[in-house]
Length: 247
Image 1: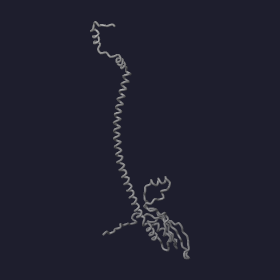
Image 2: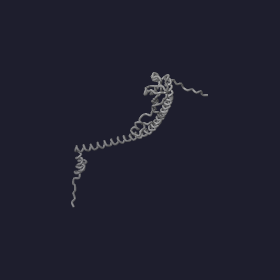
Image 3: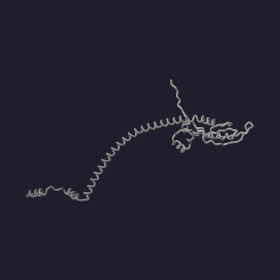
Image 4: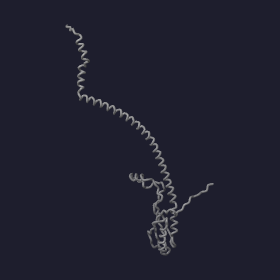
C-alpha cells in the first residue's frame, strides 16, 4: 500500500480555486451540442408549436362555451316562437273559416232571387199571341256552399293540386235555362228574343229549334230558346235594410 503526500498543499488548491467552477463532462457535452443551430431551431419550433396549441385550445374552449350558451338561448327562443306560430296558425284558420262562412252567406243572399228575376223578365218580354210551355234550368245545379265537390278525385296528384288551391266559394255560379213556347206570329218570336236580350238579367239568347206544329187544328210555330242568367250591373237592383222595431 502506497501513500502519496502532497508536500505543497497550496499549489493544487490554488490551481483549483483559480480555475473556477467546472461542469461535469456529460453536461459539458450537452452544452456543446446545444450550440448546434439546427438543434436550437428544432427546440424553438417545438416550443412555438406548444404555445400555438395552448393558445388554440384556449380560444376553442372559449368558443365552445360561447356556442353552448347561444345554442341554449336558441332552443329557448325556438320553443317560445313555436308557441307563437301555433297560435298564429290557429287564428289564421279561424279567420279563414269566418271568411268562408261570410262567402256562403253572401252566395245564398245574392242568388236567392235569380229565378224571380228570370221569370219576371220572361213575363215582361213575352209578346201577344205567344205562350210558354216549359221553362227549366239546363246548367248543373251547384252543390250547397261548403260541400265538397267532385274536384277531389281518387288520383293522388289531382287531389294534391285540388288541396293546394285556395278554398273559395263561387259567389255567382253559372245559370243557364231553356224556354219552350208556341206562337202564331213569327215576328212575335223575333220580338220576344230581342226583348229578352235587352234585359239586364238575361244574356246569350239563341234559338235552338223552330218548327210548325198543329194545335187545335191550327198551324203554330213551336220554338225553343236557350239563355243564361246575367249578373246585373250595380244600381239595377236596389236593396234596403230590413228594419224591425224593437219594443
